[in-house]
Image (cartoon, rainbow, N blue to C red; front, side, top):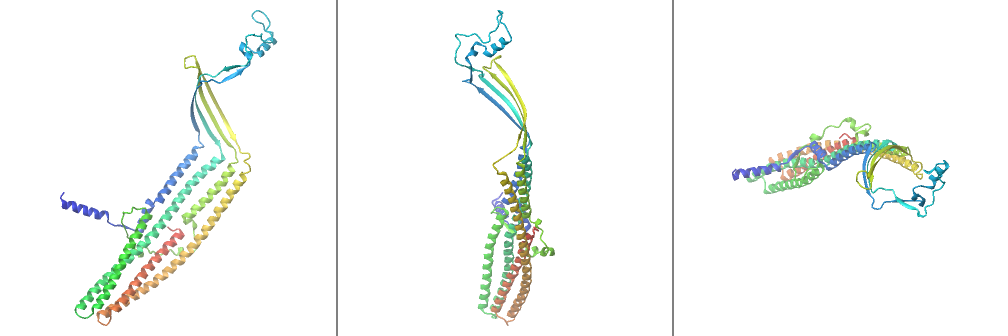
Length: 470
């Protein structure tokens, strides 16, 4: 590959990497719903809720545990026996034999007490009965048979999953609104730049015509200077707008979750987004269920009701079954015939029921009742706030619509005045001052229309937000 080919490849490759990607409002919303960190965290919370359901369910399934114990006694525990046990018998045994008239091998009747051994100790004797080595492997199984708290906990885990899913929907709605709020200013600046570009082209054409007339001696140099000053002011205004556009685009990229080095160019226009509002959106009652936050509040009410149910269930008995088996080894050594095995197995059930906890249960239940009342009041407060928000949004939309109609009429009149001034100037009966004044009025009315369209679009978006249409 030649150096020229390499240069062309690198040049066009760099230009392609910095090319601006067209971005519509819907594209920006969908991009944010996939890449915004808040959305990703909400997805993680949903996955965590699924794991919590499985975790809570597992507590009610059989719990199997294995154990392995090994002990080696270098000091064996001992038990103290009476001194009379050292002769191999006890007073009790002699008494029983004597009572039944048992005789010894010589035909003599067994006495009621053992004969006295003069050499026998008089103090208690300490005897070790523990083997040196003890090994006990075992296995145990526990099964929860009934627990009111467990049943409520399973319901709560499922309701928690529903809660985080509704939080996800609410977060999506929040991000969608944030993208709209960040996109519209960029759209306003783009529309303003387009208008300024059109005005710059018209002024440059008029300035060229004025210079030609000046060369023919029909106009003064002052007319050229006036038009040149107006042109430079508009170019400066355009440059300022472009710098501000970079700031709002950066804010939009942040909300979208896009990398800072990605380049976007808003592709929608205000007129295209200004669709008609459904007449039913401007009157009638509000459907609160369209708002994701409302579903979240209602879910919170249900979870508070579950909390009250849990406090009641905690007063019910809990029943659990259990079983265990162990196979113990004991011996003074591991030689054959010097050890033995002790298998042990058991099954059983356990019932536990709270009787008195210091009188705290009624207060716990009352707190749950109060929490339900609080959640209800929060729902009512939200409903009132939404009604007010919708009412204000409807008023703002109607005002913005009336204002746009007035500004569009003013723009038509300003364009007419500007065209007449240019015609008079070309015919030699007008002045450059008149043209500049007419152009200035036209530019202001153009900006007024752009702002009025933006205000109407913003009011339309705010109305949709309030009604939950998005």
